[in-house]
Length: 504
Image 1 (cartoon, rainbow, N blue to C red):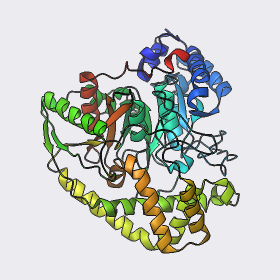
Image 2 (cartoon, rainbow, N blue to C red):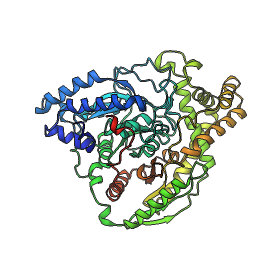
Image 3 (spheres, rainbow, N blue to C red):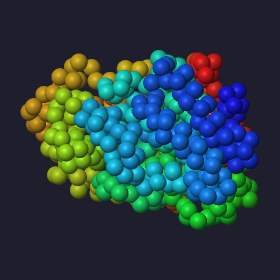
Image 4 (spheres, rainbow, N blue to C red):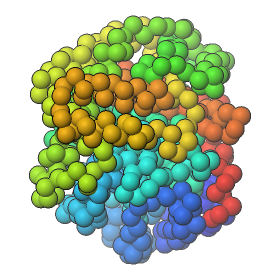
């Protein structure tokens, strides 16, 4: 199976299991072998649960006659990895990339994980994420940096960097990812994968109270559009409806775009929250616009008249309030009082900003979010889809965005002396550094719209560059139809990183 494993996406592997051309145990053994070969180089998997997965594989094989529901799921036997952040897996440590949570073991599965299990996915490990998902790169101090299979000196993005690196390295065909500010789309862009952030309305019930602004969603990074479509059905659809039945997202990914009717595409070259787009990204955008035009769509350059400075400030305030909950109120989750030495200084500082400024600034941030959502919705009355950048530049090098010694000193100072003016200054400066590279995705978390990064370009150095598309909230099916059309016109499934394929 080793030689054939990469030729199939998750749906393809599940079909092999269903036809008994390969066993669930053989698939798992292949995935584990690939993990053991690749992980020393990319550091993407931070927890292994091989023995339990082997037992599940045997259950799946034995239950093929219908006696075990686990074996009847549409992805039964497909090896799978869950992000070590946000969703609980019963009996498995969930560190959130943080020293404080390194001994925290949830006792029940999150609803998202329940649906993964019902689909028959065989979870055998957890993937690295930035601490509390705070950064658009994956370099937690607890585990060390996760690396990009396309070039080990570069980041796979974040916060779902471990998930994307694992898929790009061919360990699994798809992996769980979540997105509160770009954490599906950023690593998908960095690793040459497809990444859909679904509408916030297309999520299963959650056992976690919603965060202010409703920024976060769960889905996956994948090598094929249809895999992500099926995953969205599994998380948001009717469990009783057969995979690919009319009206499902998987069916949408197989359907032509409205009988061939051209889409009205708003082509936005503004850098959104970023400062400027690099030449590589501009070239990728221009190429994507030309590709859309060649497919018959109407592409119109548009200026997005949004106050991006206000939007950035509002997003950061929402983000800091979430940090406060998981850092300064961590004892409500773990039962252990939070200590400075158990969190990275940037996370600790963000939490203190949330505590100092959040109560006063949160209402204004939510009001700004609503105003921007209305502005973008008005634009979407004229257009079907937005085309814009996923990232302002190709993947940056490991360590490039980490706080400098001077910045760390400032962060320590503002937590020791929480002066509002100094906190606002630090927040702005830190944000400018991250947004300069990863400032093109957060807008659609604020508006709740579905958006996706599609791997349409690689630069001269062989680094992937994703292109972002967004649609009206709730119109995820349209994006999947468009993604399938782009996948057929510019196939990416066979592109593999040169560095790691020979290892496994």
